[in-house]
Length: 295
Image (tube, rainbow, N blue to C red; front, side):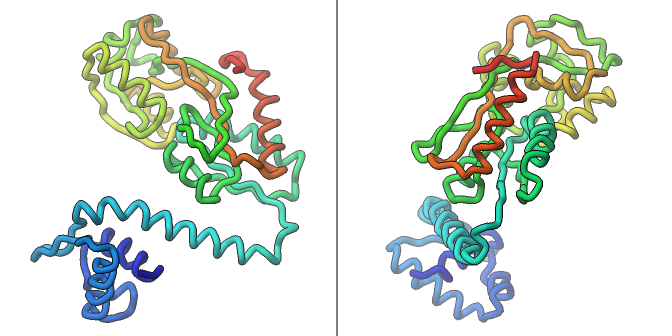
């Protein structure tokens, strides 16, 4: 098995078609069929189930696919590392951020970092918690910042502050200032996706109280959520650091649900100087916040 086989597996899993894969690779279907058969012989397992409608991953294929993607990602990272050998003096910061952190935690910190390090190239990528962790493990990020990020034995996880959850709504929805979770969930809601750490905290509480909310939308961008809430179409439940960016909303202290949320930094065991400097800035700015508690 070689890297070409890995890429073939990824392409077939995405397209479900030998013909489409052959067009992408610029080769023939019989040639790709031979490569697929070789790969299945090497693994000793059938990776795809054939049908008139195309190819579908078998149980073995579904099991192997995540490993194949990591192999492909590691190779891409190695290529990037080699291409950068001639640019070792170039300074950069590759920052990963979670969905619920993007609006509150990043802009001010980025501006402060730029003032201290105007020559450092900064790239910012927003992703889900598991994607941030895997990106760090695959050397796609130098540092990740977010709420309720997962743990890994390969990565340092540092909790830097805590906050709580609250309800937010437009005045037109006439939400009370101290409702129960069940009362607030009578309003239509717009929420982050279920794979978001803060949404997981909320789902645990909803399950515990036996509440089935009316979720109109799931949006992976806090700025968009805020805009929807401001329009009066729906309310939301998010970390209470939200008032710092939208004071026109009504804040509801949910009497039976506070949901402590941890602000987390994830970084390699030996962070780059740029990552360390950004972490120092984050720590300094967090101490100035009144809505958060320093850990």
